[in-house]
Length: 325
Image 1: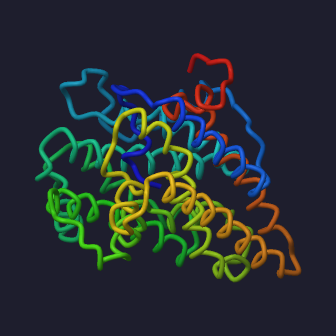
Image 2 (image 1 turned 45 degrees about the horizontal axis):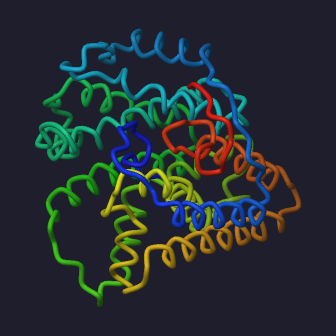
Image 3 (image 1 turned 135 degrees about the horizontal axis):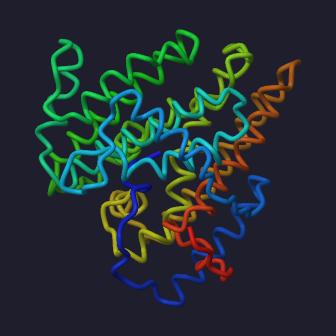
C-alpha cells in the first residue's frame, strides 16, 4: 500500500457529479464482488495511547512541533491500520509493529515530498553499514527494522524487511524520475513501480499469524499483494480525484495504455476482485481452513481501514452521513 495514499492532506479540488457517480457505481459493484460490507470502525484511543507510550519508551522522536522531525503526525494512520485492518491479530505486540511500520514508511514518503530527501536517499546505505542516519526519525526506523525477526518467522521477517527497503528505494526512484516522459511501450512500468512502492508483500505476510504455517498461504502472496496494493488504489481513487492528482497509479496506467482514467479505474477494480478470487481458491485448497478464514476476516478490516478514515472521503462518495474522526 502506497504511503502517499495514506498521509492526510488538504483537498483542493472538486469532483464533477458525473465522475462522482461513476466512481460510486464502481465501488458499489466492487464491494459485493469481494464479499465485503461497508463498515465504519471507531478510532481506538486506547491503542493510540499504547503506541505513543511505546514510541516514547523506545526513544522515537514524538514532538508535536511540526518544525521538528517527528513520528507523531504519522501515528494516527498507523493506529487505524493496526487496530482496524489487523484487528484479527491477537498478538498486541505485532499489531503495534504494524502501527510503527506504517507510521515510519509514511514519514519516509512525507520526507521525500516536503523536505530534505537526501536523508532518505542514503538511508539504505547507512543502514547496511550500521552508520548513524542523518535524521533522528530515520535512526528510529533503523532500530525498529532490526526488531522485525522478533515478530515473524524467518522467511516472513525477510519479506517484511525487504518490503520496507524496497519502498524506501522506490521513493528515491520516483524523485529521480520526476518529469520523465511516459513511454507507451513501457506498459509494465507502472505495475513495477506500484508494487515496489507499496510494501504489499510485506503487509501480506503480516496478515497471517505465526500459528499458521507459511506453506499454508505463501502461494497466494502474488495475488494477495495485488489485492492490497490495487485495493488501496481503488478505495483512494475518489480522494485523488478530489485533489486533482495526476501521478497516482490509475492516472499513470491510463496514460501508458492510452485509455480513459475511468476505464483504467474499472480495470483495476476488476483486477482486485479477480485477485481476491484467486487468493480464496488457493487458500480453500488447504485442509486446515485457518488461513482462508484469516483472509476473509482481514478483507473486511482492510476495507474498513479506508471507510473508517475520513481522509478517503468515502462517506461523502457513498452519500453517507459524515463522521468526526
